[in-house]
Image (cartoon, rainbow, N blue to C red; front, side, top):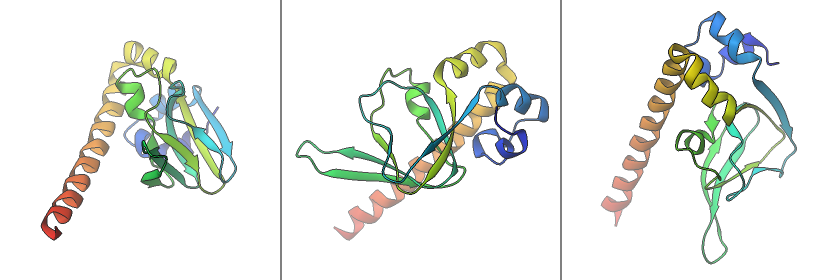
Length: 152
């Protein structure tokens, strides 16, 4: 069981009240990954939503010609794997690798889905946070794309 006060620091749970944190804390696993260890690889089964407790995680894809293309570097309190869960994907679409010793929280897919049915108020807060994070990512990507197009 994860500590409620530590979970409150996670952006995904920042809007939850103490009772909701207590409910979700019992379903959160803490996992440890040494530097260089894969958390998951593209094509592997989706196991849940991950939150960086401490460390750094690289999200990347391998191109058709075998080159690794980094997509993001995630640090403390950032989330990943959420799109696979929300989109009901059976398998991850990218690799996630610990690029330094990393501790993550994981909320299993089946627990996330169960909360969708049993605690809609809590899930509304979580989904709103995920939407806000996704919006920021889209805006940042659009900005980078515009800079590339203008410089071309």
